[in-house]
Image (cartoon, rainbow, N blue to C red; front, side):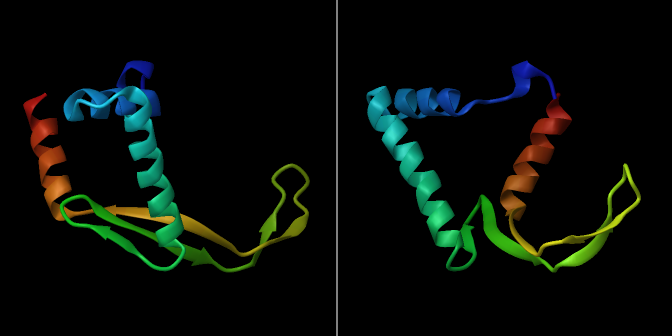
Length: 101
C-alpha cells in the first residue's frame, strides 16, 4: 500500500466537513463520536451497520509459543481482538470499483 492510497483521519474529517457543510472542528467531533461509540458498543456486543458491516470481538485462548530467537517455549496470554466483517453491499461496491480500474 503506497502513501497516496492511505486515507488519514484528517482526510476523512475534511471530506465529512465538505459534504455536510460543517466547520472542520464539528466534523472532527462527529468522527470522534462515531469511533468512540463503535469502540464502546463493541465491548457490549457486535455492532452491525447495515450496508457497511459488523464490528465485533473475538477471543484467542492462552497457549504455548516459541521464542523465535532462542527456541525457548513461552506462555502467551489470552487476548481479545477486534474484527470487522464487511456487509455484502460494501463488498459488491468494492468489487465494482476494483473492476473499473
